[in-house]
Image (cartoon, rainbow, N blue to C red; front, side, top):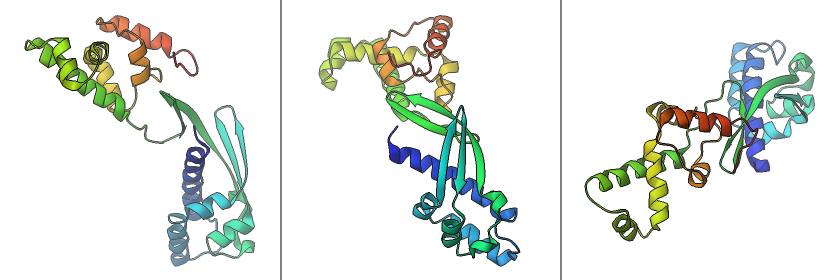
Length: 210
C-alpha cells in the first residue's frame, strides 16, 4: 500500500476522533458557536490534520495516535492552553484487506469498498456466457474482442461464481483472496460447495497472492 494511501486512511481516523473529541470538550469551555467552527475546520484541513500528528504506533490490529497540542491548536484556531490533553491520544482498531496487489488499511466502522474490477469481469463473464449459449464460439468472441481464446475462457469462469459469492462481492464482503488477478490464475470450480472450500482455503493465508 503506497505511503500516501496510508496517510489518507490515518487522516480519516484523526478526523473521526477530533469530531467526537470536539463534542466531548476538546476545546475547554468552548461555546456552541465555537464548537461548530472547530468542527468546520476539522472537515476542511487534510494537510493540517496530518501535521498535527506527533506519533503513530502500530500494534497488532491497533493504531495508537498521539497529537501535538500546539499544532492542533493552530489547526483549529484555539489557544493551546484551551486544548484538553485527555483528547490528545487515541486508539483505533484496524484490519488489512488485500485486493490483488493493493492492501488497504481499514478502520473499525469503515465501509468496505467494492472491487469494481472484479464486478466488471463478472458482468463480462455473463455476457460471454450468453453469447456462447446463443451459438457463438469462443474463437469468434476472442476474434471480435481482440482477446486470446484463453482469456475469453478465463473470463467466462467468472459467470460460474455462486449467487451467495456474487452478493458478497456486491457489498465488498468477499474473501480477501477473491480478486480478479487471483481468479485468472486459478480455475474456478462450477460446483458452489467446492468454490466455497477453495476460497476459504486460499483466504487462510494472511496475504494470499498466488
